[in-house]
Length: 445
Image (cartoon, rainbow, N blue to C red; front, side):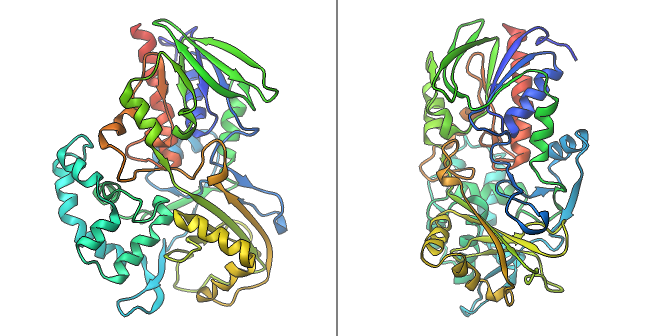
């Protein structure tokens, strides 16, 4: 396909799924692409760990679960010849207090059905506004926290616990999460993980690795975007390599496919519009610690019980991290989001992995621990958290600015997606959208 981008040069900053998706689509549309990535690897928050586990097993240190309706991701995997496998067929359970305060395993659907019943009126109003974030309804929802709403409706203990457990999904505790994020989730499709759940059979990192292998343009690793200057007809990107040398690249357009937490340190000349600067500066990224524990056997596997659980415990959410591999050994993966990220690290610092294992007896008698890996996304210099979330201080009018082009600069990344914010699918979709926008901008100028 050769359109307006034929013979044009487009710079892409960021080799996560958004940037790789954009680069691939830009080349398909005829552009010459230069891809710039700060890390020593591609994939960004898609990162499969393959070393240090017994029996040659692997598990995901970052983005893991793929939902069946995430068509852009599944189509890309299929186009690249990568096989997905279905996992977690019984979806998620929840471990927390019941109505009498007794801790036990529940069906996740129970607590969330309770939430759905109580939040239904707000969801209905939000749908009447066509789920727009520029409505008076959105403004009212956005400035309240989930915790304030729970207190206002005198929510029972088990409902509060269920939403505390949702920090493994939103990466934010009820005190830190805007009510609009919860309402939007229920307005869109209710609870996550109700349909098919999949992962790429040989590791999710095969996706970025295969995309970059097929790119024709230059890929500059360990290279940081520092500045973007633009005129009516071109852009110039100042980049810094790992030796500290700064060079410039000229192009016809640039795709900024890096997290807002990184983009806020890039100098834009001329400056971005004030609302866009504010959106990028104010967007928060949820604390997230991933813990991968490999056990001699899958002691958590019981007939009639799911292989994944949300909890309101310091350990966060957990699920079988490699059920598509050999039956034994097995890897249990944890996502401690929000304050659980800090709480998990406190347990590890004070008690080691044994402290985590002691908190798993509700799953069964733990088998021998063979290996352990901890990944703290909060400390990652290129993102500073797991993925974006919206707090009560974020102006809902600013959300649209996260994805809005500025001259010959277009933006991509999971944080710019509306339907799939926080997901790999959202990153891929945003990259496709950014490539199409770059094509449209070049054609019209």
